[in-house]
Length: 108
Image 1 (cartoon, rainbow, N blue to C red):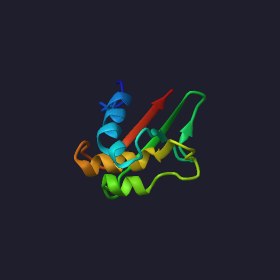
Image 2 (image 1 turned 30 degrees about the vertical axis):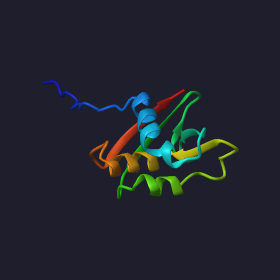
Image 3 (image 1 turned 180 degrees about the horizontal axis):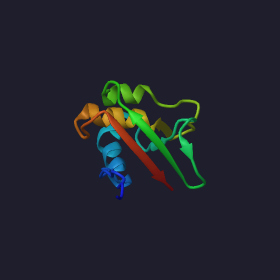
Image 4 (image 1 turned 120 degrees about the vertical axis):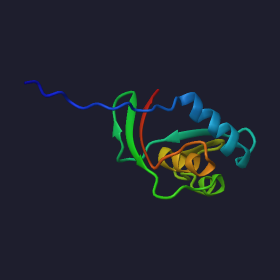
């Protein structure tokens, strides 16, 4: 008798889709010419060229709230930084994503 492991299908959001969402929803609230980076929290799992985060959206936020959550300690000049879990919460708040739990795997 064999025991099969149960599997599931995981939905993936492409980096281009996140960049497009940031360009449409967040960039208009930032200074003209700003370069926006989506970064990981210190406790997210890291590798040499990637990171993984389990993101639970306790309550969706607006893009205006996201703008106020800029990670000022990383921001320099025109380079603005936002944590990925905040960006996901804002995407849910805008209606671009549905759900409250996501796995984020990012490579560069």
